[in-house]
Each structure stands twice: as structure tokens, then as C-alpha cells.
Amino acid sequence: MAGDFDPSGRITLEDGPYRGFLEHVPIRGGLSLFRTEGQSDTPYVVSAPGGGDADNLVLGCIVSGIGVLEAQGSPDQLWRDSGQIYAVSIADRIIRYHLQPEETFRSVALMLTPEGLDELARDHDLPELARRRCGPISAMRAAAPLARKVANDLLNPTYAGPMQRLYREGKSVELLALQLGLLATGRESELTSQELRRVREARELLASNLQEPPDLHTLAAAVGLRTKRLNQGFRELYGTTVFDLLLDMRMSAARDMLDQGLDMPLKQLAWALGYRQSSNFISAFRRRFGVSPGAYRSRPRD
Image 1 (cartoon, one colour):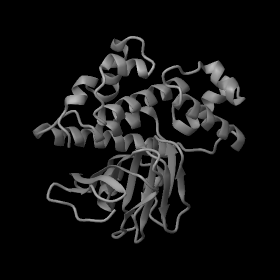
Image 2 (image 1 turned 120 degrees about the vertical axis):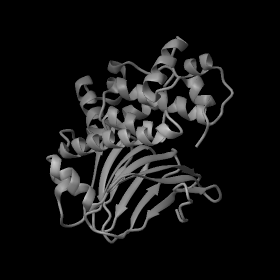
Image 3 (image 1 turned 30 degrees about the vertical axis):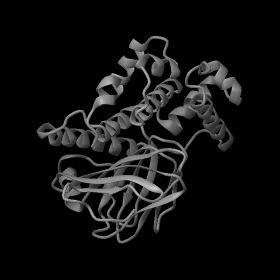
């Protein structure tokens, strides 16, 4: 992705294989928010040029998309699944996001300067990851449902106009706390590589059957895992339970269908996603995105 930010802090790409935007919003001294959304018909690379102090730290949340985070001097971070948080130091190096065309890439990221980190450290006991002042940093973890929700709130703000700045500042600080907490508790997986592969297979089964998903026991049997092991794997890979991930996928699918402008009654949309009562769908959508699906469909676009 190349280009200059316009006066509002946005780069918009409408031609070529990648179509989307990157937006930079200063939040407070030493803390900035970056919002990214886009899609490509072919594999695509988004590059973020390095520069500045090696202590500059980016804490991101990948809401959707598949790809690889490349940071020179650090191991590549592969994400096959949506809902990942990551930390990467900018240093004097190029950061590249190698994106696959299967899903829309949606991401929010917070960049902390050394001054911003120092201000946090004065009042809080930061995890080691944020306190390290030597060498490049690159790490990735599964995001918890609340972190994904806050990232979605930043991508689709409830408020516009004068209140939007205050809303974004509050949500950015909330996401920062969640990211630091999750990155501080990372540990090695207790599941074998074969078990993790079966967990991913279970996710794909859910994703392909949103209207009539299998129950937990049927899903576990289909991939050859015990139900307890399957739920453990979902928590490790996706930061949530099987049931909650199913809800996430249904809500993401609903948002995508509304974003595409599909002329479909809400009752039919609810049925397509496995809701027999449209009121249950509307309530779930409002809890996730802060607005009803009808209001989301008619909202002004950024």
C-alpha cells in the first residue's frame, strides 16, 4: 500500500487489486490509532515503512483476514484465523502484511512511542513485552472476544461528530489494556499439532454450516476429538468457546452481508444465519455492534 495521508488522516485505494483504506488518528500524546480495511482479488502485500526509535511499539488486533506478518529480524507471524492480537516494534525496518484474498482484511492498531510507553510505565506495572528496550519484538496471540468486540467498535464507531473523538479515545485505551493483558499471559499450547489441525477443521465445519451448525458433541466426533479437548483448542486458537466463536462468525457474516448492501429483509437474513426468531438475531447484533442491523444498514459510511 502506497500513498500519502489526506488532511483527514486517510489513504484510500480504489484502483488495482487492493481496494480499501488506511486511517491514522492521533489519540493522545505518544498514542495513535490506525484503522485498516480492504480486500484484494489476489494475494497482496501491505507495507508499513520503518523509522524512528526501536522502542516504538505497535499493538494490533486483526479482526478478519488471513496472512503473514513479516518484520525483518523477527520470526514471521502466521495467522490462519481471524481474531488475533499482535505486538511488533517498528525499529528501522520494513513491516509487511502478506494478505490472502479469502477474507476482507480488517485491523486496528495502536502505536506507542517511547514517551507514551514511559508515561504508562510511571503509573502501571507493564508486562515484560512492553518494557523490553532491546532488540526487535514480534508476537501474536488469539484475541479474547472482548478485545475483538472493542476492535470492531473502533472500526464501526457508534458516535459521529464531536463525540467521536472522545469515543475513540476511550475505546483505544480499553483495547490497549486488553492487548497488554493478553500478550502478557501467552503460553505454549498443550495440544499436539494434529489436535490443533483438527480444531481448525472444526472451525471450518462451523463456518460452512452457519444455518444448521452441528452441536458440540457432533462437531467433536466429526473431527475426532473429545468435547473438552475441542473447547480447549478453541480457547487456545481463538480465545473463546465453540459456541461463542459460532456467534462471532454469524455476526461477522451478518455485518458483511449488510456492508455489501444486499436487499434482504432482516427476517430472511436472520434465517440464513440460523436464527429462527428475528428478534434473537437483532438482539445479538445490537449487543455485538451497539446498533440494530436496520440502523447499521442505513448508517452513513465513512
